[in-house]
Amino acid sequence: MSEQLKFIVEQLNKEPFKKNFNLITFDSLEPMQLLQTLNDVLAEIDPKQALDIREEMPEQTVKRMCALLGMLKYRPPGNLSDVSTFRQGLVTGSKPVVHPILHWLLQRVTELKKRAYLARFLVKLEVPAEFLQDDIINDTYHQYEELVEGFKTYHKECEQLRTSGFSTAEIRRDISAMEEEKDQLIKRVERLKKRVESVSNHQRMLEQARQLRVEKEREESLTHQKQEQRNQLFQAEQRLQRSQQQLKDLRQAAADANPESLMKRLEEEIKINSYMVSEKLPKELEGMRHTVQYLQKVASEPAMGQADLQELEDKIKEVDYQINQLIEKRMMRNDPMDDKLTLYRQQASIIIRRKESKAEELQEAREELAAAERELRQRTNQPQASDGEEVIRGDEVKKLNSVIVEKKSALAPIIKELRSLRQRCQELSQEYEEKKVQYESCAAGLESNRSKLEQEVKALREETAQEENRYHYINTMSEIIEMQIQRAAEEMKAYVSSDPQERKKAIREVYMKNISEQELLGKKLREKQKMVRESHSDNMEQMKMWRDLEQLMECKKQCFIRAQSQASIGQVIQEGGEDRLVL
Image 1 (cartoon, one colour):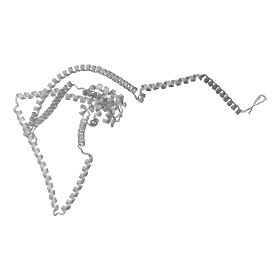
Image 2 (cartoon, one colour):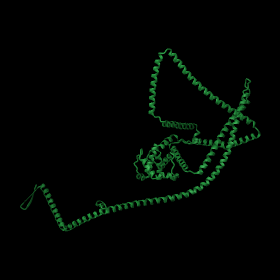
Image 3 (spheres, helix red, strand yellow):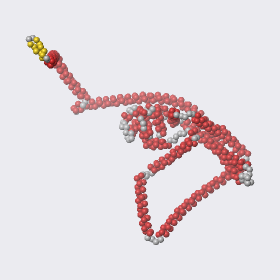
Image 4 (spheres, one colour):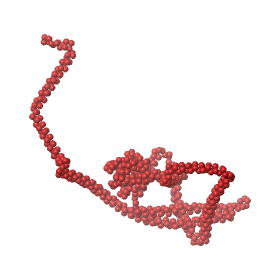
């Protein structure tokens, strides 16, 4: 686990994340911060994931992350194989769920970028079968599939070009080299022209060289035509051999026409007709009825507004969410019994599809045969033309008979194969029912065992959590005791040391020094207290005198202010024991 965290922190501190984490800060992240970190890593792989998860509902965040992780083919560890546990841990930002995801993503960022890019174009849209019955939608879907296949081809070519070792600089150098060679060739041609012009009959010689070149090109063309004709001859011989073999088979079939074989063929035809009437045609009829009902329902409903469309989109999203949950649950479950039943189901479905395809081929062949017989009867019963010539001729009758015989001979192996397929389908259906009963009984027992194991696992997890807490507490106390023992050893070493400087570093010496300083300070404070007590009465008397002096000065100040205010109003004159105010 520590190596995993160390790897995650190292990768997140590099480009392009630059998170500046250490083991402690990363381990102490809040669940919301841890989910945002996971979303940042997913956004580096798929830019469409770049957003703030605080602006999104938790259910939408989990759905979006699960969809992307499923597309990237991420499989949770063994202890998180339960889908509900995994989703709950992703909602709450649980470290046992998020840390393995980050470790898996950061190990293969480049590969996952490529996978996410390709998924945008290669993950096909699922269109319901009833919608594909519309010709326009069907044609559009086929065009979409062709574009997907074209994208695959172009992507492969692009990858081959990237890995081929060519670069634009090399191509430019090659182009410049070819241009230089072209200039050199032009110069050589000019020099040769000048040299040839001095030769007599040079025009005739040039004409002969031109004819020689034309004849060589003609020779190559004839050689190519000869090879094509040889290939055509070989194909014609093969067709001749096949036709001879078909003729031989037809003759053998005609020679073996006895009552037993005829009865056998009739029984096979009866079985085929019973299958067509009881299974194939009712299914097609039921499908057409559903289509008609759906179209009638659509036609009878009023025009839909924006609110109705929004409601339908919400329902579609809800159904998609439920489908994704079922797919994830199925992906997480690895049941060997289910795998065996899946194999039988696949075999049964393959045989049923082959049976249906053969039945369709048989139906088409029968329709062609019936059409040919109708045409034969019409031409046979048709009267002569006005000019007396019969419309139908003997060679045409032979031709139509040969066509009928060919159709019947072509139906024989199909009927034979259909009979074996029907028998195989019955055997597989019976075996499937037996295995299904075994699976259901085994599944019931496993479900009861699973519930018991879940309870035991829950109890063991709680016990493990308690033991982990106890372990961390004991580990912390052990570290504290070790630190105390270390400090005590260092103190003892410094105390018994012969070096005075080392002894001064001892805690005992430091405390003794502090004690002596505090005692000296206390002595000084006691002396000061004694002096204050002795001078207390004199100081109190002096303080009282200062207060009296302060009151006296205040009184003088008030008198002075009053005298000044009276002098500003007028002048007081005292004469003969009288006071007069002169304004």
